[in-house]
Every structure is written in C-alpha cells, then in structure tokens.
Image (cartoon, rainbow, N blue to C red; front, side, top):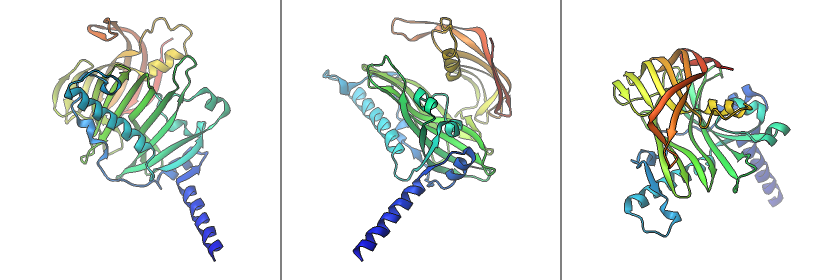
Length: 344
C-alpha cells in the first residue's frame, strides 16, 4: 500500500512538472501554450520604482566611508529593485516553456544577446511566463529570460535577465511587445531597468547604469496599452513637451504630430556590430524625427547619427548635440512597423 502511495506521488510530481515545463518547437504552439499561464492581479512589479531617485549616488554598501542618509536609503531601494527582478524570474507560479532558439527568437528583444554557442548548436532556451491582463481584443503576458553574454576579455562573467510584455490577440498573433525590465552586466558594471504596472494599468519604468563607484539614474518613462493592444507612451500633462531627450506635443496624454527623440539606439548598436568599419560610431545615440497620431507612429521615421561631445567624466555635453547624417528609416502603418532600412 505504501509503495502504491509513492508511485502516485511520483506520477503527480512528473505530471505537474510537465504542466509548468514544456518543450515546444513551434512558434504558434508556444503562443497557444502561453494561454495556460497563471493569471496575476495588478499592481504587478515593485512600487519602489516610484521612489524619487537622485541623478547619481555612491554605492554605500561597497565602501567603508560614512555616507549620508539619502545615499543609504537610495542604495537600499535600488537593491530591493534588483532583488525583485530575480524573485520575479523564479516565481513558482511562472510557467516554464523550453524551446530551440529559432522558435523562441520572435519573443526576444534586440537587447537580449544570444550567445554564439546557442546559435551554432541550436541549443534550447527557457522562458517563464505569467498572464497579467485579459481584455476583449487581447491578453497581456510577461515573459522572462536569462542567459550569459559572450565576452572573451571580460574579468567577470556577464549575465542578462530580461522581462518582456507581450500583447497577444484572440487570433494568437503577437500585437506588440515592450521590454519593461532587465539587468545586463557583471559586478563591475550593469545596465538595468525596473518597473511597476499600477492598478490604472499605467506602466512605470526607470532605467539605471552602475559601476563599482556608484549608480546613475538615466530615465523615467510611462506607457499605457490602447484598446488594440499597442504600447504607447503616456504623459501626465497635455500641451508642449520638452526635455533633454524629447520634444513634441501631447494630446489626450499621447504623442501627437511631429516628435524629436534623442536616445541610445539598440538597432544602431546591432547594425554597427555587423559593420567592418566602426570608427564613425564612438557611441550609439540617434536623433529621431517621426510623426504620431493618437500615440502611434505613422509614415516614415528618420534616424540620424547624433553628434555630441563628452566631458571628462564621460558624460554627454548636452549643448554640443546636433543632428548628423541619416543612418536609417522606419516605415509605420498605424503604429506597426512595416520596414526598417539602413543606408549603405
């Protein structure tokens, strides 16, 4: 009788693991499998994202020098956000889906750098999913990845963790995706982003860069999801909008008309990596000009090289910034990209 009991327990354990760890090779089957992910309730993320971070602060935990309370408190909040990312990845109710690289590639963002060995030997990749929202026209999912970054000259192994939001329509087609959080790098330096989705379904995300000496707060953006499942930038105030990185007009809390945006560009980074001559690209900033309607890009967006100088600390001198040569264009139809074309 006791032997039969253990056999039953073993069967339940194996069956349970099959539910939460499935190996799937076909993209459409992966999307269908996501539908069985555990559904969570908002808010999702860590509300510490809303903490008012200074532009820079020392990492007090790595030095014996006495730090003021502001630095200690800020450092503590930053550590909590880091920890949440890994806790979220390992959350027991996330569904684990294992696929080969080609089948999984559609879910990855350009920021996620697949190792050469995975590509060469077509190794498996695991992602872990949750369902965040169910709407009339789409469902919202969070999928998380982790992996190592190839770096032969690095003193420490570099890692990457990524959380991508996907909206999937009732026809099982991906409508849009948004990289909401990541941690890339090693103990010597990291780039990171953390988030919270509040009960009003506004997505808050803040980005940082860190090294052995301190952390720099690099940006705060908000997004909302429209009724068709598109992620669009959200702005608290309407009217003219201007910062060091954006210039445009806001209507109904969305971008409207012509916009200029100055940012580091992941697509430029990937393109430059593929070029033999990289000397013309000391950094990967672009100067974008695009048109928007109800928060969605329309027509042709142009991406120019951003010409800028740096100070002695390696920070961009904002007054030196100007538009350079045209590098590539993107063509949009109601927010959906139809073509990306780099100039030779």
